[in-house]
Image (cartoon, rainbow, N blue to C red):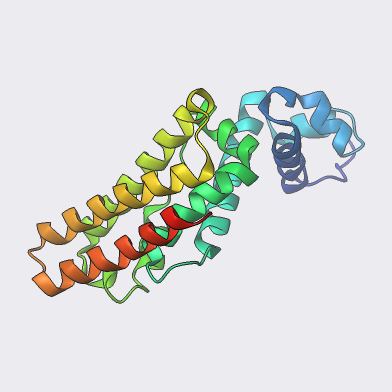
Length: 204
């Protein structure tokens, strides 16, 4: 029986995650991951049948990590808007991780976790589950689109934030219109989001 590895499966995933986070997807190789844990490649293959298996597990780990950081972001009095702004802030800080997930056709998205988070908002909690999930998906798909075009357009964080706020306002009003929300509710949503947009636009 071969000796038991001193490195756990989680150790290896974290090593791959740190490598991609610091140096980008192109730096990934089984050899480079092994070097980070001062090991040969043999322990890695005792947990993962090939490079693709490790990449898939690392992508799942990266997605969970990013979503947790996004949901910690607080700035406005609109939780869903904070979620969108959190995405954009992390797009700069964790650019390698987002690019890695994009290359694998993944987005940072967990409807159950994000819905539970948004239900803390006094307005959003009145949305039916179906509409709340649709709102979350719209935000995530829009953010992913910003990420795809980022390298080509050279958009600044500020411009991306302004685009996201306007898109979010449209998504949210659409969701509340679909449930025939009261006019006062729609006006409150519009005002809350528009105030954030104006503050952002006027920021130097």
